[in-house]
Length: 254
Image 1 (cartoon, rainbow, N blue to C red):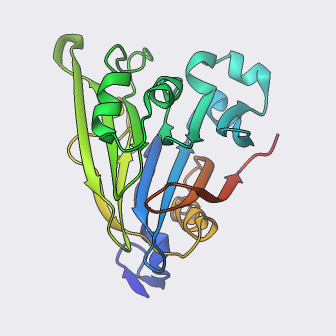
Image 2 (image 1 turned 45 degrees about the horizontal axis):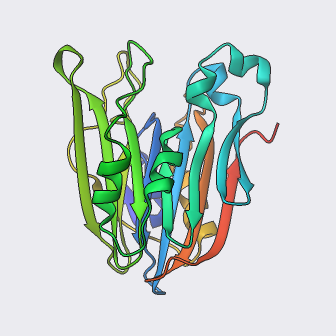
């Protein structure tokens, strides 16, 4: 148990993943489970607008896709930014991202290759999202086997310039990494995430336990709107990346 200073009460440690962050946007968590030699990947969505909220994640043959629960609400937003494959996997590895660039990264996967090189090659023609005035960053992850993952963020710089950051991060028992599109505060304009991925504890022995911990950590404070949309978790063996478990939590099933 740990002490939550903000609430002044005791709570389970797993509730600390994103506690205190009202609006992280979309996010990726990657880490190694403490109890097993296994990788756990999490992709999560929070949303403020009706079109962002009108979505769910669904399992398909080669991964997990973001789909609408209300097509009419999706049309009122930007469908090309709201519907996409979030997680894709194959014998060559696993990809996670917050947009349609997932497909390009999956096409560049090469087992045994540096995950950072995979991301750099696949994302060379991509830039931040065209959702002015926010200009949401594109965040991505690649796993090509072994005991490390690659993460990247593409965000807007001064005068519309494109800033690309790539990180090769070790997988350590019980430890993980968090990358978000925003800094977690619910203000306008939304500040894009910057800096290195956040180092955190991985609490749980299954994808289901981790996904539930992440989802519950995003529960709103009293009087605040619930911005949760969906969280998906994938568990795979190390160092080969064979999928062992998939868990999806949708606030709205549609």
